Length: 109
Image (cartoon, rainbow, N blue to C red):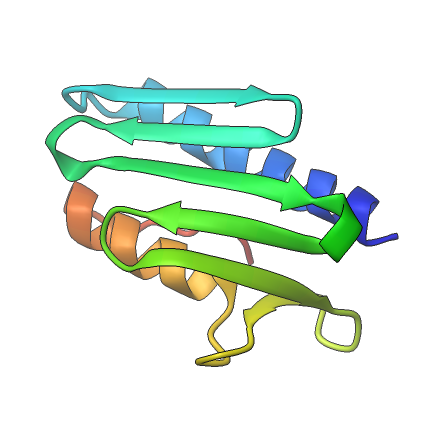
């Protein structure tokens, strides 16, 4: 279950990131998704890596701004939460990417 949800989540994030890349001219911007690993390169803004961890039923995020985090899926809310600060993966990514890119980013609704 969580693996399918993780795939769906990463594919949803990928769709928005590809659209951002198509609509904006951002130096060093590149998005790749292969074998459950999504990589977002932002030039001087650093590189984000998101990957699913099926054995742990988690999505792992490596952020150049906030470091590594491990997100667990909450079926009641339909969101991925980081247990240490109770923030969702979309909150963190939306805030950080909006800050880096200079415009409002909404990866997941």
